[in-house]
Length: 315
Image 1: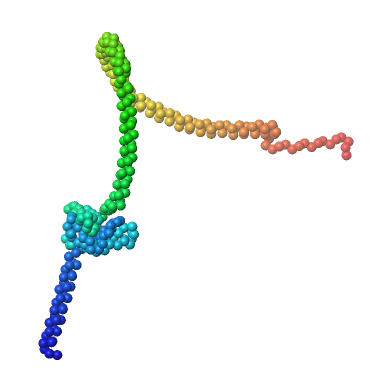
Image 2 (image 1 turned 30 degrees about the vertical axis):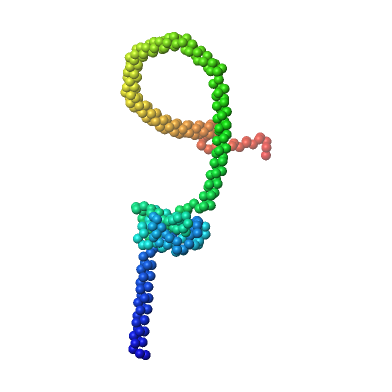
C-alpha cells in the first residue's frame, strides 16, 4: 500500500474517533443536565411523549412517557425530564393544560413556595385534576336544570306576592282604615281615663317603697343584735365543745372499762355457778346414797345378814 493511502486511512480513522467522542461527551452532558420526575393523573387528555413541561409558564423539560400505572390501573403515570436546577418543591402542583386553545396539551407545574423543601430527582410531583370538556358540559347542564327549577320557584313566589299585595289592598281599604281609626281613638280615650289612676298607683307605690325603707332601717339594729347574738352563741358553743368532747371521751373510756369488768365478772360468775352445780350434784348423790345405805353413817362395811335361828323340834 502506498504511503498516501495509509495517511488518508489514518486521517479518516482519527476523524471517526473524534466525532464519536464528541457525540458521547455531548450526550453525557445533555443527560447529566436533566432530572427525572413523575406525576399521576386520572385523565391524560391526549398527552403524548415529547409534550412540553412548563414551570411557572417557562419550558423546563419534556414528557418522556405516558402509561397506565401498574399498581393502580385507574390512574395514568407520566414521566418527566426536567432541567437540573429547576426549583421543584413539595408545594408544586402538576396540572394538564395547554398554552393556547389549538396547541397540544402540556404539563403545567405551579411554582409552589420558597419555604417548602425541594423535591429530589425521581420524586412524585403532586397533581391536580383539571376539568375536562365533558365534565364542564355536565356541570353546565346541571346548572341549567337548577336555573329552570329556580325560575319555577320564583314564578310561584311572584304569584304569592301578588296575592299578598291584593290582600293588603283589601285590608287597607277605606272601611278598614276607618275601623283602625276608631280603634286608635278608643285607645286614646282609654289612656286619658286611666292616666290619673296610673299616677295614683305610682304615688302609692312610692309611699310603700318609702315605708319599706323605714321598716328596713328600723330592722337594721335588730338584725345587728341578732347577728351579735348568733356570734356569741357560736363562741359559747365553740368554747363548750372542747370540754364536752373531753367529757365524752372520759365517759367512753369508763364504759369500755366497765364493759371489760363486766365480762370478767361474767366469767367468774360462770365458774361459780358451775361449781355450785357440781356441789349440788354431789349432795344429790350423797342423799341418794344415805337413803339406800343409812348404815354407812356408822359403819364402813355393810353388816352381814343374820342367820335364821333353827326352829324348835326340827332335826
